[in-house]
Length: 621
Image 1 (cartoon, rainbow, N blue to C red):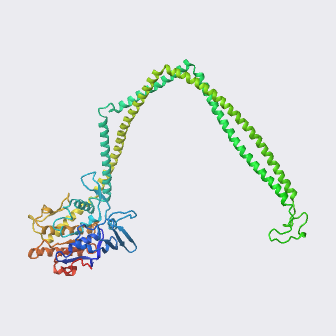
Image 2 (image 1 turned 90 degrees about the horizontal axis):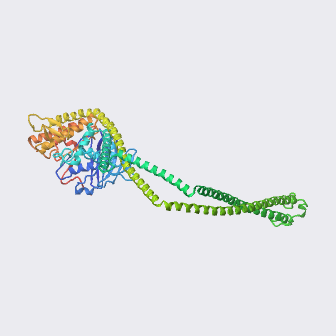
Image 3 (image 1 turned 180 degrees about the vertical axis):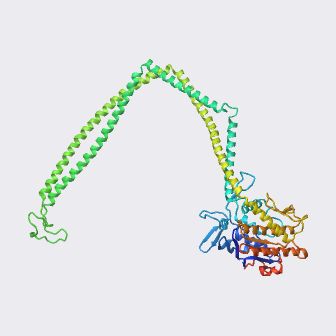
């Protein structure tokens, strides 16, 4: 089961700190001293902050708690605000978290209430909000819904079973019951969610197909086969018109002798295109040759400057050092050696090499100029040929156009009629294809629906297998019934009929006493007794059978609707004795907190807090 125990709790700003040992804990006090407020604050520490907290809680800024959640003890600091994104600080042995209370924010992968769900290993599922409607939106079963089985306030203990008279809470109460006792598990919830999505898609497909059929009904397009036949006929008509047009064109060429003329036009067009390609190729060559000529010219200029520079520089006789300005000794060199570097002079060889290279470059430049001139003349000749050919082509095209205009003039009415007929056929074919696309959509929807139905059958089969595997749920519920009957017998309630019987309604999951529902019980005192036995039975059976219900039970106001004398007091004593026994039996797995006006004196050693009119729960500083 889900481990949950409050070891200590501090009301920051409220001047109160509480410690809760294992087993049974009692909180006593007069009315209006803050007992029920304490229960609501415990709920706020463990889940969402209730919206109906009294005014005096405004002094409390934070709730701080030392809480066992799952397998570890955590220090929890929670702002006392209903803001869904208020940050809750959580510190463990090696982990520190700061999570929004119940609504995810960007950058925060989790929330505090969802973290609690995971730490206690409670099922993380989403369920239909309306159990009877497949299209109902999904809602999560949160830790707050599990806490309804754990914290029972004094204004509910004698009127409701875990909030069953409030519609939304009752829906969640039933889901928690099913999850806890094995009637509904996370895999089954996932399968049912998938079934719900498939049902919605099937319904949408059926609606869409019905709309299309209604749209086409009573029209010329209501039969797919007729549409296809009409489209084939129109295609034949279009092919026949194409053949007629070809024959008409052949007749025109024979009558006006345009065949040879058209061939000549095509020949001239091909020659023109070929000439343009040649002109472009020659233009590219001229551009490349011009660039080469410029490069050779620049290279020849550089070589010329090198020859001149060498003649001038090598004739300089240094008598002063160009670096430091000192005189250069005349004996330092000779006629064939340089006074500066003391190396042999090769002026004649260097000059001859430069002159040779200059001659070679100049010859190549002259050759390039000759080729460039030749290509320019060729380019001019090609352009002249192109102009003559374009003029001939223009004359031929004009003659062909004149002959065709004469034919069109003679056949104008016939051609206009043919054009209108062809346009009408194209429009009819387009419209038929549009309507066929609607039928294609209906057919595709049918294929999708068939696939969805196959998926649905598989999911239903999986759900049935899960149902057969959940036969243990009936045993769990029967154990709950027997344990409640045992506990109720120990509380000695007034008999309803010849003998007292207990049942768990298989639809509402509410207790029934001697055939009467909880709402039909005669008094609030009897409802309180039933609620106590029912709550204790849930927790005891969950511990015995390893069910996930968190091991915390807070009961508020168990004696408020019972008298203080005689038989009523005996029933109060019986309730405390039963609660103490169950708390002791399961002290390692169940923490019980009883909040009451005047607990029996024999349980005084279990009292962790006594409130009074002079010492209320909240003591603002």
